[in-house]
Image (cartoon, rainbow, N blue to C red; front, side):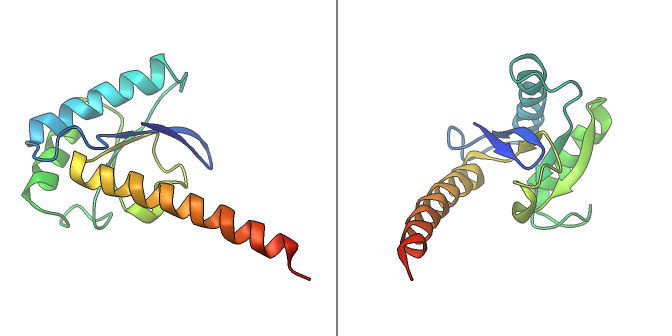
Length: 127
């Protein structure tokens, strides 16, 4: 899935296809997301990040830590971990996560957008 961040298009991969991933799968998502951002979205030098519970390398579960190691060793422009609160700030062009986390993010984002539209609509008619 691609969405607009404050700095341009961002790819979030995976958003629901695979909820039980291995580190090699998340690494492959990073490779695919990088290629998609570069070749389809036209991002000249896409940066890849891993969605995590904190930016620090020592945070996260085994899946995240092992995937982080693979991405660091890969030669991809890996910028490290980012938190969910940063996904719309444009800290990276490709955000890698498993389908369980990605689908939750997708659904929360959709719900937040819908709710904000309703709230803004109500507030614009208030005196």
